[in-house]
Length: 133
Ligand SMILES: [Zn+2]
Ligand SMILES: [Zn+2]
Image 1 (cartoon, rainbow, N blue to C red):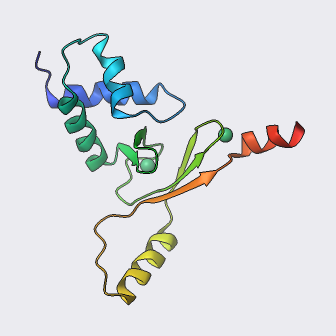
Image 2: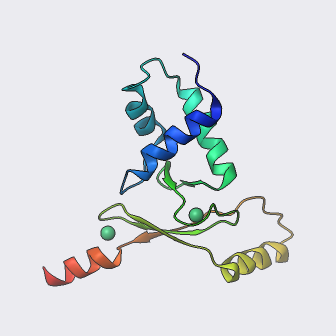
């Protein structure tokens, strides 16, 4: 079954928006196959790549998973703070961080094409819960 690219992107956004935690491409595929059993993995990968390109979805390199953009489709790489306890992801865009990284790269003559900024740790909610225990 063929589904138009944009329609597939909207369906993936729907799946990702409904989750508290990031999803892998296969999580998304599993969910969408309930409605469209013959859906091909390449269809999902292509739609996810387009969504990342548009800034609607961010790819979490360290988890090999995807999360919906919490802002207004960031074109700049956000800082993604990933809670290792509950799996929640918080994002923030910092021009200072991006500027500092570009400066470091320039010093060594490196030309970055893509930034990936991920922090792992404990979110405020889990930190509070841990403190009480
Ligand atoms: Zn974002
Ligand atoms: Zn947490």
